[in-house]
Image 1: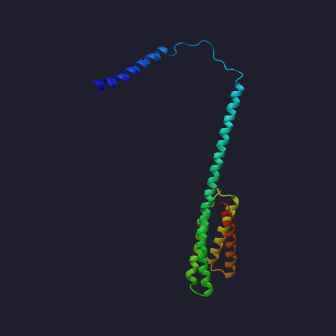
Image 2: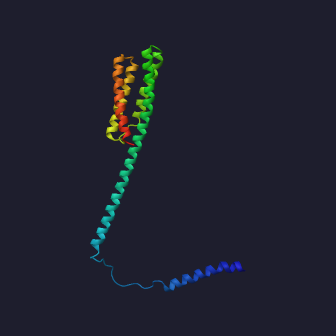
Image 3: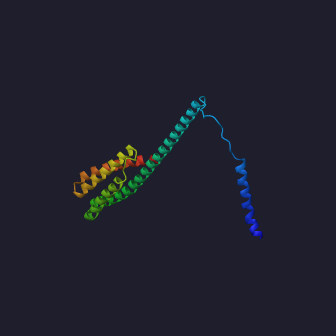
Length: 185
């Protein structure tokens, strides 16, 4: 019985409150026409204009920060790829050059050197995009082109002088690209 009273008491209190609100609530309408206070209109319009401007600035700032973050992420990603893959390519090319200089296993090192140069260029090229700053994008593209050209000389079994000239281009372009990469950190 006590449980039933505990359940009924809140229900009864709620009904009493609802009846009291119905009796005390608004039951009368005010006569007249709604009018705008003309003196407040300019202040209202100014307030709305300021709010819109503030929202636009905030939105623009957030978008600029988002774009900067995307640019930084893209630069760091392609720079890491270039740094890692080009270092591996250089080791492989150096093994080929050592083989040529000592007359040992030239054929066994030629293909891997060619593949490493072209493979590294392909990896970097796949990540070069309009998201990157123009100067960095151009430097990476120059390195990609030089690496592919050096790989092509190896593929064609070109003369040492031509290969050396292309390797110089690779090294110069790599240094420039890595300097620009460093500036993104």
